[in-house]
Amino acid sequence: MSELEVIHYVSAKMFFAVVCGAVIGVDRELTRAPAGFKTHILICVGSMLFTVGPSLGDPASTLPDEVGRVIAQIISGVGFLGAGAIMRSNSSHVIGLTTAAWIWFTAAVGILVGVGHGGSALFITSSLVAVIAGARQIERIIFKKVPYSAQRHLHAVDSHTPPQDNQGDHSKPKAS
Image (tube, rainbow, N blue to C red):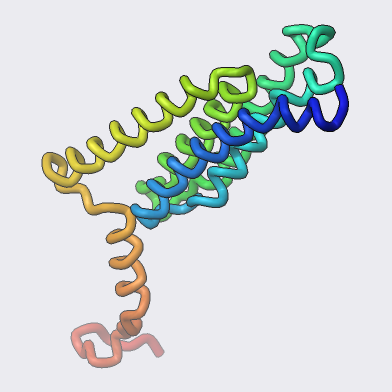
């Protein structure tokens, strides 16, 4: 494949990957969640390029097993990226699971674009972003869950409270 043929082959896929990653990233930015606009575009485009890579030499000679192996490596590699987003805030509260899930989903969308289903990827991306936006509203109304952006604000306010000591508490004897 010549350079011009590669550009032609990849350009439509690139468009769909950028748009899908951007749709996810905008939603993440609007909710002030980690892994936002640029990150999701990069994950989606990167997954698409890795998926397309084996067929850039000669699409007719690319074996389905090659693409399958590449996809398996994307899935496990992105799993590590997502695992890095998961943290434990205290002994019982884990944060970052939704971010990790979005990272994995974004990679899956990039793979779907890479194998030639850009329109489906855009439909699935838009649908899932809408479903998750609805789920956020349900969490707020039914479960009284505080949005992530508000949790971060509350934590920042709490962390600026001066530490309290027991100097004014005379009920406990001081150790000598």
